Length: 76
Image 1 (spheres, one colour):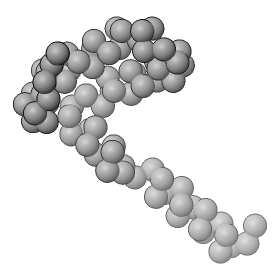
Image 2 (cartoon, rainbow, N blue to C red; image 1 turned 30 degrees about the vertical axis):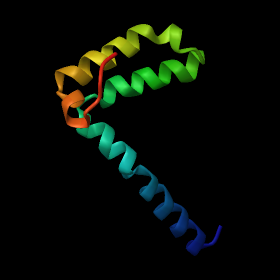
Image 3 (cartoon, rainbow, N blue to C red; image 1 turned 120 degrees about the horizontal axis):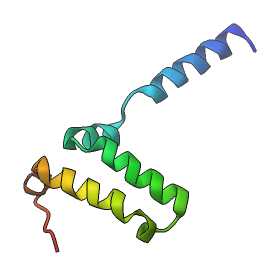
């Protein structure tokens, strides 16, 4: 690998570590950990019904941080 290719690879890796718009929005909710656990559960089990506990923790966090008001969502 040439020096230039190595530098490009390092720059790309550094850029990938920076939060994108999605990450920034999730972090701003105060529920990033709960969101990660919920999506990890679904990725692992491929069935939302198997992730009810994770979904409930995320829902509680969402409400506790006032995100329903901030995003104007309705709870069914």
